[in-house]
Figure (cartoon, rainbow, N blue to C red):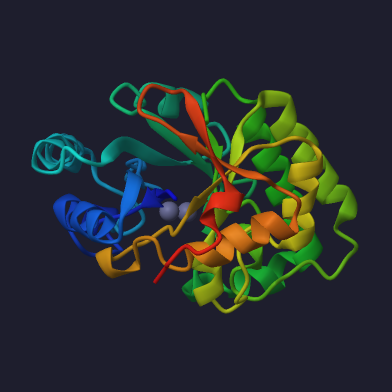
Length: 280
Ligand SMILES: [Zn+2]
Ligand SMILES: [Zn+2]
C-alpha cells in the first residue's frame, strides 16, 4: 500500500503557511512514499503586485535550498521539486525561461484576462463580481480556451491541476457540459499530460473534488492518467482526504494512480491495493 501527494504549498505561496521541512515531516508521519512541493511560479509584479498569489523571484533560491535540505533530513521519502505554473494569455515565453530547476511542472488556469490585458482571478472570493459581469457561460468558455491553449503550448506540463477550477465558488456549469468535458479529455490525451484528483475542492464552497465525476470519467475514457493530491496550503492538510480521491477514481473506472517521479518517469499504484488506506 502506497500513498502519494503530488501537489502541496508552503508559506512561500504568499497565501499559505508552513515550511518545506514541515510539509515533508507531515508527509513522512502520514506514511507517504512520494511528496511533491509545488509552489506557485513567481508572477510578474503587475499581475501579483502584493506578492500574495505566488512566490516572489527572490524566494526561489531558498525554496530550492530547503528542498535539498529536506532530502538530506528525510532520505526515506521521494521529494519532488515541483512548481505550479499559472498559464496566462501571452505568458509562454515568460514561463519557459523559468522552468530550469523543476522536476515536476503543474499547469493551472486561475485567471482570465480582458482585452486591455487586465487579469481577473475568477476563483478568488474577493473578485466574485466578475462572474456577474461576464456571465457564467462566458467564464467557462474563456476558461476552456485558455486551458486548452495551455495543454497544447510548448510548456512541458506534467499534470494539469484542478481541471474544473471555475466551479470553486459554487459556479458549476448550468449548461450541458458534456461537449466541454469531451474537449478537455481529448486535448489532455493528445499531449499525454496527467490530470489530478485534487481533494481541496471538498473544502471549498463547491464541496466537490476537482474534477467532478463526469469530467473524471471523460478523462478516464480518453486514456488520461490521473495522480492524486491535497493541494495543501498548510502542513496539516498534506494527504488530506486521499481516500476520497481514490474512491472517485475507482468510480470513474480507473484501476491505477499514475504517479510522477523525480526523473520525469511515471509509476503506477494499483487502486486495488489502496482499499484500506488510512487517510486524514
Ligand atoms: Zn492552483
Ligand atoms: Zn496549488
